[in-house]
Length: 100
Length: 426
Picture (cartoon, rainbow over the protein chains, first blue to last red):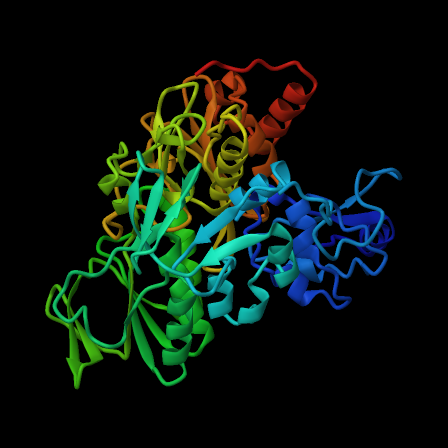
């Protein structure tokens, strides 16, 4: 099952697309993150429901191809998507003060 | 964990204690299938880093809970220690149903519930030559795939003649079975596991219902799971197959909630009850329960059409809503990754089509698409999920099932998104 039908399609995708997760279908197995050659925590992105906008992403398609449930896909994104500006590597820090 | 996250997000100062006898902590249980196939190493199965867990500020007790005193707001642990609670969440999960044949206690009979089982299978696979797998649903194939990936000769027994007959159509079963054969799995139809033979306490062979003897080193049993409701039952909470919860996931007591596999939820529209052994709904139930526990019960758990995306014999498969009926001869209860809802189809009208890289089947209700199965390319599963969840009036599809399926689905979805389609009340 090929990801790309023509070379032109392939180059357009590489240039303009992000990996889009489907958090409702993800079971957090981690195969995506494991296969990322750049060490992007794709699983975390899916958990948070955000596209992979990490500048390290090569759009190599390994995570998309390897997801055992096929729930990642490439999609061209409009220039101003909702999502974090910093790389998604850890859970968002919660505020330090605590009422005890 | 989803409940703990929700509580911590709502209440910074709450004391949260997690009681769990599983020493491995929080890992992706469905991911164990890919651990078996060598697609992922064990240490990558944990979605939360130690830092994440620290940030949640949980107290973790690695013990079994033995009893609950709802009036006294007390939980008694195995050691006799007692914990007092304001709010309690029961999320005790499911347990594999064991084989009830002679020899079931022999060394070499395995199941796949949790991490320890996966490790056991992997350890044994290093030296085992042949395995027999009995059971149905997703877990049986996860074990089959895992053992094949580790080089074993695998026999898969089916008591009748097709796989997962109460959820899949005949064509779909055949698609899966063909793939299994192509992978080198030896398929046995109309074959019962009658007994397991051993020597020196270890498995050496199995005996089938018609007297055949098949040598093997490993027997995997995946005949279904049952929800662990003993704790709820002995506490006097209302139970049927699972723990009966209201729309806020309260289990018959204002301060006790239930979530995950054990929670038998109620559909607010139909009054219908369902049990699901599904990961994402479990997380969602946990989240809703947690939010309600942290404050007041205001969040309603919306029972959507059960959906799972899984992999059967290497094929991406999405199952949504009600798609089949009856029971399967290879399963005694729900399988992991299964839902009671899937086999509650009363209307037999279905439409199937093979479209390029996808096999699509729609189960048609009176006015809506009641359920769908998509094998292969998953593109159509997304609009179908939305159409089924929203109960979009699909009279065109219902009335002209022989019309081009893809165009019908996409057309209906586009209409609905543009506000041109109606929805049906249950």
